[in-house]
Length: 204
Image 1: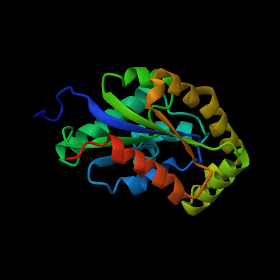
Image 2 (image 1 turned 180 degrees about the vertical axis):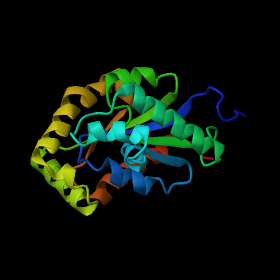
Image 3 (image 1 turned 60 degrees about the vertical axis):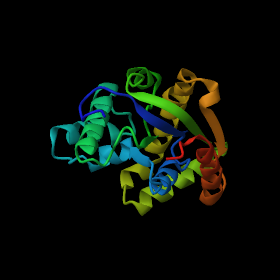
Image 4 (image 1 turned 90 degrees about the horizontal axis):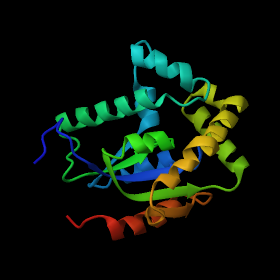
């Protein structure tokens, strides 16, 4: 059995989609399944104390709707996994990571290729841009993230997704990608995801 800190690959499922597509909602629900561990980079960034060195650097980017630099993102992700392993909340031989917000660009996918064994990608697709914008505004209000309600920040985040994150899908084999219509009710999206998970997750 691997010990915490030893190099190994983690089985991983990626949640892809533009901001407002429901990745966080689905990840939070699916985290209740015994074999899945939901890891949201957005949550990691937001829970990092703002008065600390990392927190101040993260705030400098996220407050403007910009992406956190790749090096800092990957280091924080790997540190988070190590802490979870040391607490025995993550067992690499038992659990599959459900990643939300990572990798966010092609360079991150390349850097994480030695860390992640990606077994499935759920691409949550929304064709109605206005629907995504309204979802982002509602979430920002609900979570008291008033900076995220700015039109400039929302449009910058969406543009960043099209310019960088969407292209990341091309790093992976096309047969790993499962397109999901995310414009529907969350429960309908969840049903499609769970049906696919029942096919691919090992019966432990």
